[in-house]
Image (cartoon, rainbow, N blue to C red):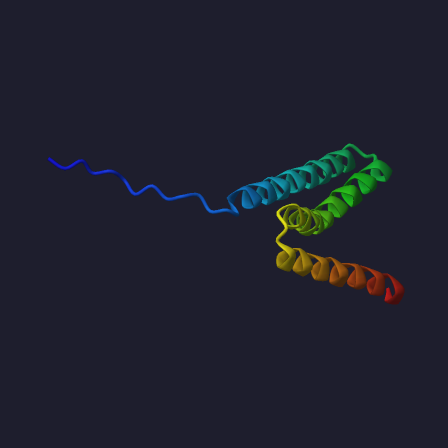
Length: 107
C-alpha cells in the first residue's frame, strides 16, 4: 500500500519579502481609503475646509504607498546583502525623486 504524500514545496527565499511588501501596500491603501472616505463624509456634512484636507491627505497617502514599497524593498535587500536588487531599488528611488522634483519645477 502506497501512501500518497502531497508535494511539499519549499518556501521561496523571497516569500517574507513579498508578504511584507503586500502588507505595506494593503495598509497604505487602507489608510488612503479611510482618509478619502472621511473627507467625502465631511464634505457631505458641509465642512469643506476639513474635507479638502482629508481628501488631499488620502491622495498623498495613496501616492506615497508605492514609494514606501520601493524604500522598504531596498532596505530588505540591503539587510539580506542582495546588492544587485538594492541598487535597482536605489535607481528607482532616484528616478522617482527626479520625477517629483522636475514635476514641481515645471508645474
